[in-house]
Length: 154
Image: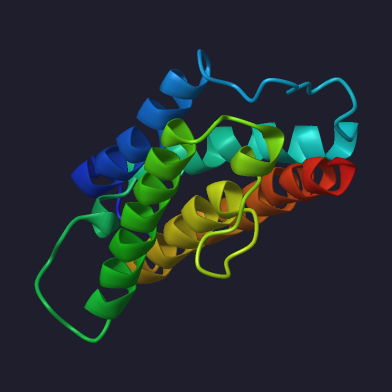
């Protein structure tokens, strides 16, 4: 279920998620608009964002607690977050077109949405915290769904 306590790993993951998104606010794709986003997907995304953010911070199970077979999930989560940062680096160096923002990375579709969702799910597996995994599924349905909707439009 999870042990209540501050998670520094969760904080680092959230910072890796939030900082590029804050930079993105000033560097959106030239024709970006969120006016036609599906309302149900948007609600799922927002609920998921709040739940993932809170859950990632309040369970100490995500902190490093020795090496075991479960450490694989933490390593996988870290690798995915590093790939996410690389995806942002590539986007910020691009022409910042819609196709750049909804691009894939090494075969991973809509990588800007898929990578962090998968990373947080793996973090939930590592910490064995079902609440994070459920929150991530809710977030993933909304966030990846919205990104796929935009990709279809371009």
